[in-house]
Every structure is written in C-alpha cells, then in structure tokens.
Image (cartoon, rainbow, N blue to C red; front, side, top):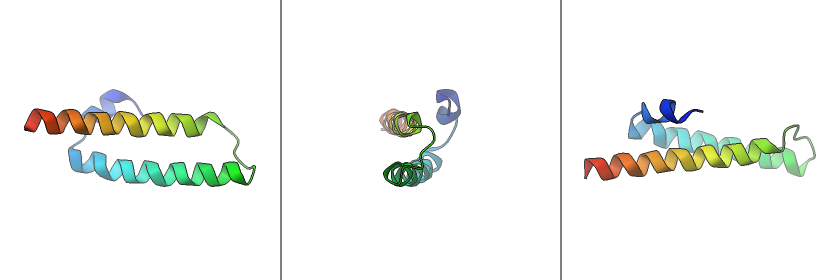
Length: 65
C-alpha cells in the first residue's frame, strides 16, 4: 500500500486497517511455521506497512491536537 493512499484515509479507517494487517501478519507467520509461505518477504512488507500506518495515525493525531 502506498503512503499517499494511507494519508487519504481517516484515523478510524486507518485503525481498522491496522487490525486487518495484523491479522494478515498472523496468517503469514502461521504459513511460515508450516513451511507453506511462498514469499518470505511478505512478512517484512506487512510489518513495514503497519509501521507506516501507525506513523500516519500519530501525525494526524498530533495535527489535530
């Protein structure tokens, strides 16, 4: 997901997106443990996306405060 797409969403949408991404990360870790993960880089990409989303949430909260 691109940063521009993340910035266009509201804080509530971003919070729900973080929950969805964490579920996806859990599923990727589960696939890794069962040796069925096809793309090992997907775990790192998902972690980075979660970090990006959390950063934008903090920026929006700081701007509103």
